[in-house]
Amino acid sequence: MIVEPKVREFICTTAHPTGCAENVARQVKYVTEKGTIQGPKKVLVIGASTGYGLASRITAAFGCGADTLGIMFERPANGRRTATPGYYNTKAFEKLAAEKGLYAKSINGDAFSREIKEQTVETIKKDLGQVDLVIYSLAAPRRTTEDGTVYTSALKTTGEAFTEKSLDLKHNTVSEKTVEPANPEELEGTIKVMGGEDWEDWMDTLSAAGVLAENAVTVAYSYIGPKLTYPIYYEGTIGRAKQHLHKTADRMNEKQSAYHAYISVNKALVTQASSAIPVVPLYFAILYRIMKEKGTHEGCIEQIYRLFSQKLFAGQVCTDADGRIRMDDWEMDEDTQKQVEDTWKKVNSDNVRELADIEGYWEDFYHMFGFGFDTVDYTKDVEI
Image (tube, rainbow, N blue to C red; front, top):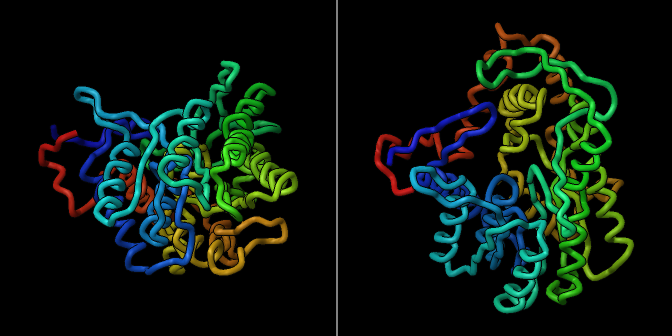
């Protein structure tokens, strides 16, 4: 069939298999050209099919020569409905890894479940023996715990209602958006889904099963952002979940010595999750323009290659005073943030295309679903 993008709000309901393969191939090419990293050799990536998780798997495999096991929750094609982009990404990655002679197996299922954790342990025992790096890059809207309770995350404030400028993605205009405060159940649900509980459960499971190599490292990805987005992000429900994630890393390091847990605070980037957060896309678009002009802009693959090569596996792990790896260092540069603040005050619907990188935002958005690549003929029939 001919596959075209069908965008609804902040999500695209179709994915292009050839375009997704192109997206993966470009990231592999970037890592291969940047050169070898003396890093891990057997890697588990939980949340491995898109965004930072996919970039981590690509960097581990093609930068470090690592065997990788990826956990994902993706839907294959069904009748005339395409698969999810993560499904196509994973197939493309596995094909390129096989051509390179690298082990690359994927488990498709609910990473929160006991069943998938046990299946992962058995696969590691059978195929890899042990893993020396565990990346936790899970982005999910809901979680079912072992007692059958379903928790759902909410994008809300934790104090008062918050009104601020936001990018209307349907019309590419600037409007005001009000975000309501969460009730206690919504806050609890967000922490259960996006906090550190499941990460710790994974590490306890892997450690108890003896499948972690000596001096293994685990890294979970987080975001803090500028004061501008604090009410909706860092001080909102998501931020509270991320703070729980940070505290979980501290607790894991205090309670055991079998592995070391790190938080990597990453840069603001267009992902399926971030597109849904009010206020944030406008900040991203303004930030993109400024960082591109400065020559400091990075996508997922550039960010993760720098994490592996300069901060995580460069002899000594590079952290801030709180023990966190700061990959948002270029985003939070003082001059960059000053320019963002000045632009934010001025931006409106009339000048948004001039002051913000709307085209760059949408290019990243479409690339996530395999669209917008000049090397792909989208008028051709494709096998979905």
